[in-house]
Image (cartoon, rainbow, N blue to C red; front, side, top):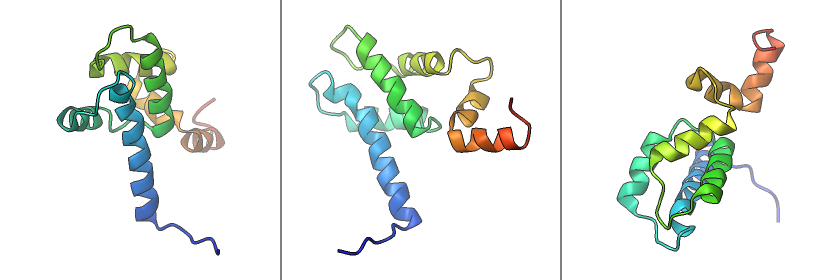
Length: 112
């Protein structure tokens, strides 16, 4: 069967589905179905977090969560900061976390 190229929209939808699935693990990890209203709030509050960083952070939260409840958004942001090694400028750290963006900065001599 020939391999077909995905359109930009298909790639975006697949990535968004994966991103949301990772976030929904907070519910499935404690044996509860995802709460659509609350999941929408979490998606809105964490929308600027790259997929890979979100996955690392959610894994950290799930390992450290000792209560059978979905942790608040602030707990996820704490995990994100830990993954980024407590940056002074969180917005900048989120941008340069992506390896493609970081390599461009390195090429231009803007990041050592």
